Image 1 (cartoon, rainbow, N blue to C red):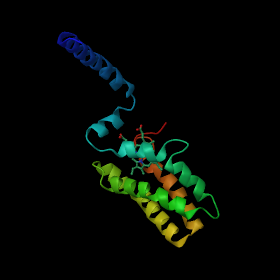
Image 2 (cartoon, rainbow, N blue to C red):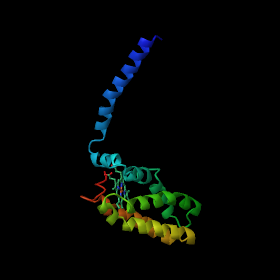
Image 3 (cartoon, rainbow, N blue to C red):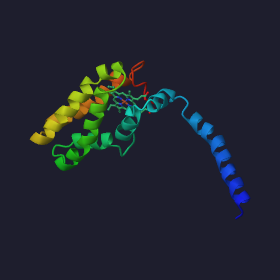
Image 4 (cartoon, protein in one colour):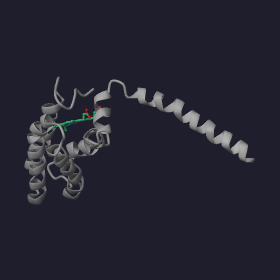
Length: 149
Ligand code: HEC
């Protein structure tokens, strides 16, 4: 390949990138708020998605385990660090509203850890339920986390 062909190829690729990027950005419409927070370096939205969204998410797995009379405690223990990290991120959130609304979530995670130590299925069950209810502290209409689909 001659240098000129190479330069032309590189320019084409760059041009292509310039055309595609703005299109991509528009995919995020309707989720503009989540995008803005990510740009500010607050990755709470990403963590939320990874942890809570979808059939195979840690949240869904936790809900399944929480319903069992004898949950596999090792599996519960493996899931908890993700929720711990989420708690810490909420407590340190840039938005005061998010920090203020994080209490129920944080307490539920704390009690789930206790449940693992005590192998207390009832305590786990109660706090998986509390965790699930805490979503609305931020995600009800007008809440700082925005409404969920
Ligand atoms: C203390 C506040 C708080 C609690 C409690 C909370 N969230 Fe969030 N959530 C947020 C914030 C803040 C965002 C990011 C929104 C943004 O970036 O604009 C978010 C984002 C999300 C997203 C991603 C939405 C998107 O469009 O990117 C999902 C999904 C989500 N949360 C689910 C949940 C679920 C399920 C629960 C309960 C288990 C929960 N959240 C509890 C504050 C919270």
